[in-house]
Image 1 (cartoon, rainbow, N blue to C red):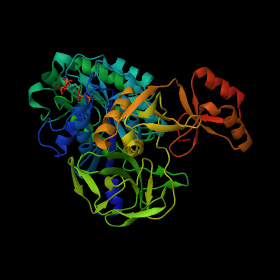
Image 2 (cartoon, rainbow, N blue to C red):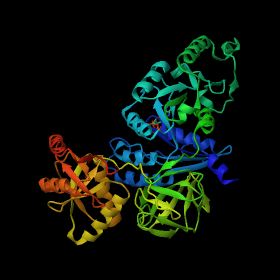
Image 3 (cartoon, rainbow, N blue to C red):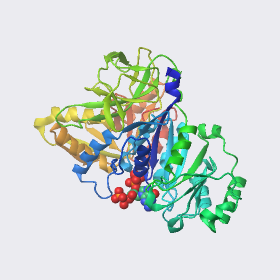
Image 4 (cartoon, rainbow, N blue to C red):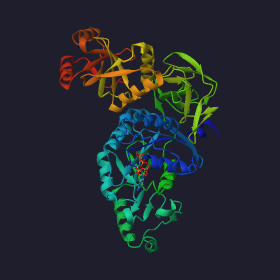
Length: 524
Ligand code: G4P
């Protein structure tokens, strides 16, 4: 197979949803089709169950699972599929956001009864920002559901994207009869006991009275609704989907493996192969010969007996080859990657070659941080990896003076992993941890103790926002830092950060220093 063919057959995507909409179930059913797993139940949910925030064994167990299921690669027909898993719990959403920088498209799962939920909206915002093509899967049609037209309107309004149904449900809940696949003009009947293996019935002309034989009185309703669908929505066109302006919609029931193969078949056909990516210097085309990639995730200390880390590298261009020297641009140093792993069928195995769209796991002893660019020499810097804006802040203090070295190392490594952000106050030298959720503080404390043998204590701090400040005028910057010296801090890379304790203080500073830009994430 040529290099170009390898690229064209790759589909790298993420499945996202509000917790409980069915992301894990759908992922598992897709893996069954790909032969990546043989039995249902093999993919364990890596979500942290509600109310279990202090169940640390659970966190550990899930960290173990989530490394195994971080990337699930499998072959389907002649396609190479890479599913990138994203954590369900909202306290880990920045992990999800970063993973979304490594996908070429997204499937959003929506609960047919609940419709669009808050986290679905947030995730869609990230997709919209990046113009990521999105397919919507309306799940749980076997349960009483909202009217499909109402759902379509809700998706359009709340997710701010045009929709185009490519399948249509026939009733719902106990009366759910199946779906009509508009994309390939076929009928698929729902029988709860046979797990979706029933054949599709080719049904080009739905005015054919034979339809009544299959779905009885629902036939007439289906005809009316499909007529309305065709009247309301323009004919399906792949271009707006690829541009991120239109979401094709499918209906089904992941639990009953119903509508999943339809989704997968349409997905491989219409979803994009690896797309160009952007660096500060230039656009990178996947078909270029030079190897480029970036680190979007780091996992440390999965096995407590080995101080191991894995850096997840998304390949953006060129062919990746084992044992070749690749340069970490941030460090200006080259490394030989002798045991890169691929994630096939949720098992890790050493790979000799990998292609754009693929993710390779690089064993790391502390050389990589999230956002690092790897190339075969060219100096470029990938951009667009969001660093989240922390919403909660605490002072971190050493609770065991004999272990200060361990604490420093632990905090350092956890920050490299992207668990939270660290700021050092320039006023009193104290260290401040910023996170997006309460759970992260508990995770940090737990992992410091169990992985680094260090103890920490958090102390409350009243803080509203951390703002990275930027101006071309050195004098203004000096003046700002002098005036606000009690509120100035440095981030891990030594950049100036203004720690505003209230919305009001922030507004005052912005009014007072109009030539300074206040950024709420470190990527600007
Ligand atoms: P998530 O990853 O998006 O959080 O959702 P997950 O797949 O774990 O599904 C959440 C719950 O919804 C699970 O039930 C799952 O079995 C159920 N579910 C998923 N898809 C469907 C569907 O198409 N129809 C119906 N009726 N239910 C569905 P649970 O009881 O919370 O968990 P479990 O004990 O079954 O694992």
